Image (cartoon, rainbow, N blue to C red; front, side, top):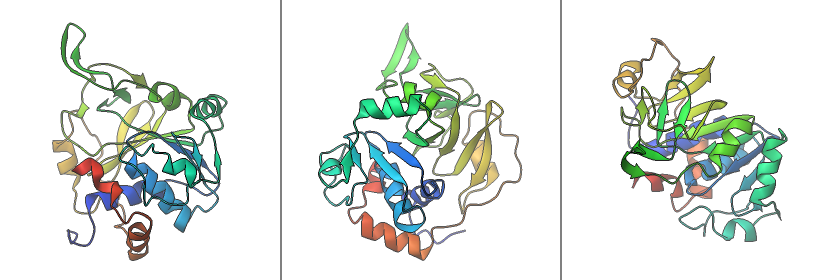
Length: 243
């Protein structure tokens, strides 16, 4: 078991996502995406200096996160950037097969890789209306690598069948507080677990059957990663979704 005082779940998830990024890739994050935003900055600082960081307000390679707004879509990401690249151009880039990574969200996921960001319930028995597909409906099917993150991992989030299919297929990874899922041959498989988590715990918190019994454990955040996180994200924006 890890020392819970050494690093937080937000630290672990941010480092896990950062490690998925490679040097030279073009990566994008949307609104309310503090954890992916910080993970991209972390990757550029440590192992992917030539990665291109695109964001929803249109900034290219922002130099600082110190005054970034709650939505992660503030003008600071443009004012402190090398250049600008509009959201319309991001969609065009992805459709043309030139967007390497897109960080996207969702509320429900099932074993077939379906993503629900639209409603909970049915159209005739609506319980919750969600934000909708927005960019996910375009970017998940077209980006080379679609990485989804979710700060909750329970049987209401990972379900047998989603209530509504906002988008589907072409997922690459899903990062949660417990583990990382991979999308392989049309279904989600357990790719790795975080330190302090067991496969049995993941199974108990997942609403569809997990067939894997032995999976690797992700390395805990290194001291270098933690030091860099505190430097580039001194306001701990990466933890906002847990509050």
